[in-house]
Length: 172
Length: 420
Image 1 (cartoon, each protein chain N blue to C red):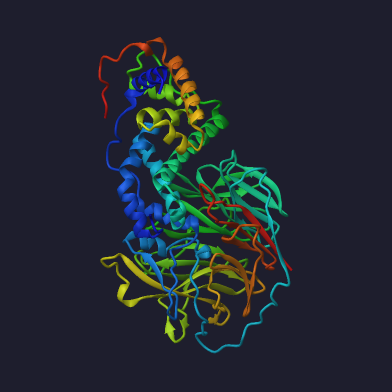
Image 2 (image 1 turned 180 degrees about the vertical axis):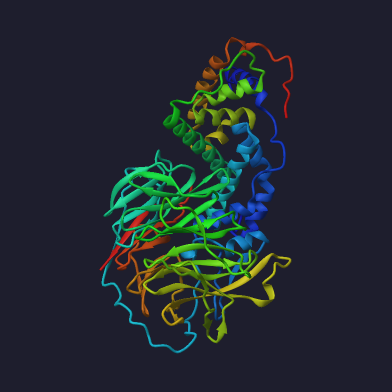
């Protein structure tokens, strides 16, 4: 168990940073923003590090922090846009759900918590129980949010969503 | 898992598959900056208690990280471990100290239902306080006479009002991406101060604002003579090209720190005309300090810590550690003398009132030091750990917040102490 020292913090961060960055990237789809989220999470973690010994599952704790940073950012972003220009509208989604920008834009239209649930379950491949733990909600809530999110996502992406995947998308 | 669930999962995975991928390029985050900012937020360094004569502090000295730590803008909240009594550097007449407070009470400041909140600043009259709100539509709160005056959304991340004056005008800083920006707060509105990459730390009743510009390892002290004025860089000595201005007295005298960007940062004064003056180093128990880290200026006095760096570890070694020892002292501007502060209870960095009282922490406990008396401030219900952030000029109103660990995160609640 971590003892709360700086060296311990550095060792912990060194061991987990790649996964944290990947999760941040999957949540937001943008490398620079992912790095901002990681930066903020590392800062929050350092603030709490002296008392980290009281935390049972540090990995889950840190990922919860990251998800909250993501949710906070989405909440703040929505607020700023609304104040200045009215409700934010992501780019119009057209046609092919194979298209990364189209799926990302559709995902961005969902409530932030639903975005997080989908990403954690289907991109980070975390089981429902773990997602519930990270999101600090019940497994039933994760399932219902998943269901709502998928229904909405399919509606946003149009009828094509049922078409079997026959091509491999280009991934960076 | 039922058949239907499995189908849902397969469909969902297929739907989201285009989003799979790995972040590209070099990581854009900076662990040293996270630690530096983390230190600033939690207002403390990793002080460890030494059993020897003086408490020994271990600070990670990973190059820039330590430089940043040594140049921290707000040392007022740093928590040292217990230290023994301190001898003055030279015999002087004992300063007249106010009697200790007769009684003090603590109140939880209202937040309109927001759970997590800090007090970050208070004005000299003790009427106005500013704080932060978390997990709420607004991120900044202003209290007047202990009641909510305003809840507002300040632009940027990590937005915080760092000081406020008797007119209720505050100075604040937030992040826009990785760039900090200084603001002035007045009547519910935030206005950008001149300059980018700026931080505003203090404002006096005349409306003069001081702070810093530049990133952590390349910063310079600045002053804005009014909220609308052009930023003015304050001069620094050749040997200490970096620095920041952290507090300003009502007469316009500016307190700050200068350093060489590596390990040394020591207290520095700028007189109202802008000329600079390095403070002499205190001598404690016959030993001359390596630097003086000052946290507060009021009524002709400066409060801070004499810092001793272990001579054999002033450079980063294999373990990246440097040992520092601290002793609290007061400096009288009129005659340039240092005076001891009773240290038996481990008094840390603090805030100075005009009557000589010092609001500080003894361990995690808030105290008021008056002369040789240390008065523990009352704790609120089950809360055991605190930070203190403001003290009125007459010493009767103190602001702070709890830092106890809650079930999921630090349980910050905003408090106001009132003493008679």
